[in-house]
Image (cartoon, rainbow, N blue to C red):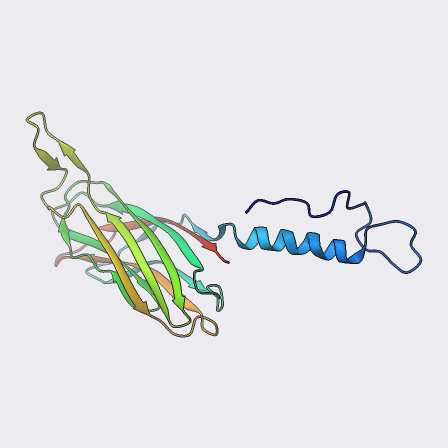
Length: 210
């Protein structure tokens, strides 16, 4: 859908009062406003951006970034969220992972992986409303860097083999029309964890409605 003028010319006066000689008809003004609302609603719009640096504290799970989705944001079946989470891992021998939840339900629960280099992680998520009490969640989690050695063999900057995880899950939630929903990312670290083994420094959440 593109944003187009419904009536042209609309005129310069937005509100027409009794006795006015000029200005658009009130029904034309309503049409234009309705067209604008429809265009805005059908376009992705940012509802959260967070670039604060939040460190894990220990073994966890420790909550990193969190966001409370207002009630009725996903108000119609087919409305969806586009989410990008990102951060870094510390350079040490401890096994680490990042998990993600929607309304207390873990949709990304990757197990800890032996990631030894100071590298980044990123998670791309789509959360679509199926009904007032269920959503479909699809995500891809990149946890490590993968490359090809000079011998043509796949390798990584850690010793773990879990480079990325993918899920496509049906998640039951409280009624989306009347309840807020907490979205959060959590860190998990093996025994012997130290602060900042896992760091999150980016959350971008966009909402697309009907």
